[in-house]
Amino acid sequence: MGGAMDEWFEAQRELATQQKKSIYYARYMDDIVILTHTRWQLRKQVRTLNQFFNEAGFSQYPDKTFIGRTKRGYDWMGAQMNDAGVEGIAHRARVYHLERLRLYEHVRRWPAARRRARMSQYRKKWKIWAAALVAGSTLAVAQPGWASIGTAADLDTGVRTCIRNGDLKNLGNNSWGGQCVIALSARTFSGTAAVRDSTRTDPTVYALLSWPNMPTGNGITLTLLDDLKTMCGTSVKALFTKGTTIPLNTPIPAGQTIGATSCSTVTRSLPAHPYDSSPHIENNYAGAVSGSILWTINVPMGRTLKYPNLILSFDGSSPSTRDYMTIGVGGSNGVDPTPPTPPVAGDPPNCTALVGVGSAPVYDFGNATAGAANSAATTSKQVAAHALTLNCTAGPSGSIKGAAVLSVQSNNLKTADSLTLRTNNSDWLGLRLVMPSSMSGATTAAGQTLGSPVKWNGAAATPLWTWDLPAQQQANGKVTVSTINLQPQIYQVAAADSTHDGTRTYTVTYSVTMQ
Image (cartoon, rainbow, N blue to C red; front, side, top):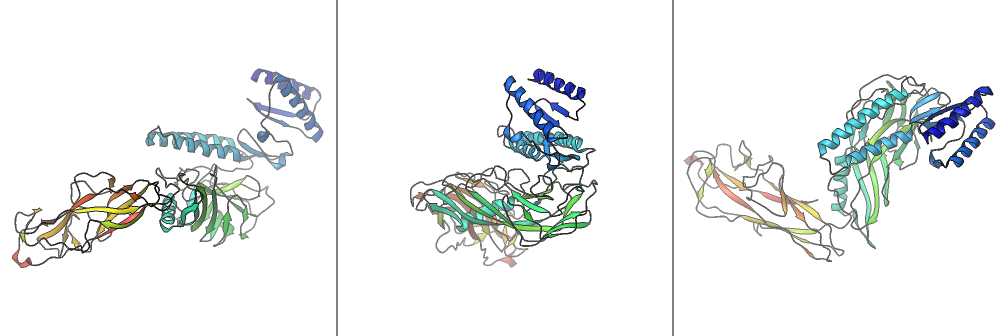
C-alpha cells in the first residue's frame, strides 16, 4: 500500500504546485490529511482520492473520516487540531491509552509486579509522546492528570453493604439487582490538567460523567456532597455547588462560571493517584470534595459484578472533546476498580446463629495451681474447646457463594504483647484463646497464626478467620459450614502472689459479619 500511495500523493503534489493552487497534503502510513482554501477544491480532491481508493482496492474507516471546516476541530495522528493548529491530545488517543492500560492490568498470566512495571513503562513512553505532540502548539491540553472523589475501597464497602442490607437482591425472572447508594469519601485535590483556551467563545464549563465500556444492565448518577471548584491558578473558574447531580453521558453546566479568563500554562506537581506527575499542569480543583453514587443494577443471576469505572471530565465548550481536567470517581481514574474476587449477582446465604458457645456461655475453670510463669496453668476443671460453626440456609432461589468473618471482642485488660486477658495489670493469671493448629473451609485473619494464642486488637473487635460459604442451588437448602475449634486456656503471666488470689472473670463476645 505504501508504494502506491507514495506515487499518487507525489503526483497530486506536483499537479498542485504546477497549477499554483493552495492545496496541502500530509500522510503518515495510512493516515491522510488534505487541506484546501475552498470547498470546491476539497470536493475535487476527495473525489480524486476516492477514485484512487476504488481502483487500488482500499477502503476508509467511516468513523475515522472527517470532511469539513478546520475550525470545527479534527484529529490526526493522535492530535486534536483546528484552524489555529494543534489543540492537544485527541479524545480517541486518550481513550485508546486507557484501554491499553486496562489490557496490561488484566494480563492474569503475568505476576502483579510485571503488570505494574509494564503499565509504568507504557505510561512513561506515552507521556513522552504526548509532551512532544503538544510542545509548541498554540493550544496546550495536557496529558491526563488525575485526582479522585472517593476510593476503590468506598465502592467495595458500599456494594457489599447493599447486598447485606437487601438493597441488591433477587428481582425474580432470573434477574438480580436494585438500587445501591454508595458514599464516596472526601479527597483533597491538587493540580490535574492544563488548557490555554483563549480561542474559546463559550465561557460555560461542563461536567461529563462517563463509564467506558459499561456492561449492560447498569446505570449511574453522581451527586456532589460538597462544592466543587475548578480553578485557574488561584482564581475560581467554575463552581459546581453541593447537591449537583450528574447522570452518565449528559453534559451538566456549572451552576456558576466566573469569567472567561484564559489560563496560561505553568508546571506544577500532580497528586500521585494513581499516576506520577506530568508536565503542563495549571488548572486544578479546590478543597476536599465528597459525593455519593446511585448505582442501578439489573443483571442476570450468577453474573460477576463489574464495579463502576467512572471518570468525571470538565470541558469548556460542550460537546467539544477538549476536556481540560479529569477526576476519577471511586478511585478508578481509568483503572478498573473491581476487586480480584468481586461479588456475584445472587442472594447470599442466610446465617441465623453462631453455634459452639452454648446457650448460657459461662465457663468455669475451677481453681488454678501456681506453677512456672509464662506457661499454661493447671486448673481443677477442664473447659472443652469452643467448636464454632454457623447455621446457614439458602433462600427461595438458592444462594451464591459467600463469606462470613468471625470476630471476638473483650473489654478486659490485655498484656503488653496483646495475647492474654487480665483483670488488672499486676495479676499473675490471665485467659488466652488458642487458634487451632489447622483449619479447612476458612482463611486465617491477618495478624492471627494457627496454633498460637489470639492476638487482640485492643478493645476493638478482633477478626479470627473468614468462613467460605459454598453456593447452594437448592431452594432453602442447608449451606455446609466447617466447624473450627478455639481453645480457652488459663495462662500464668507472672510469679504467683497470694494477694491476688480469688475469682477472676473474663468476658468475651463473638460476632459474625457476612461478606
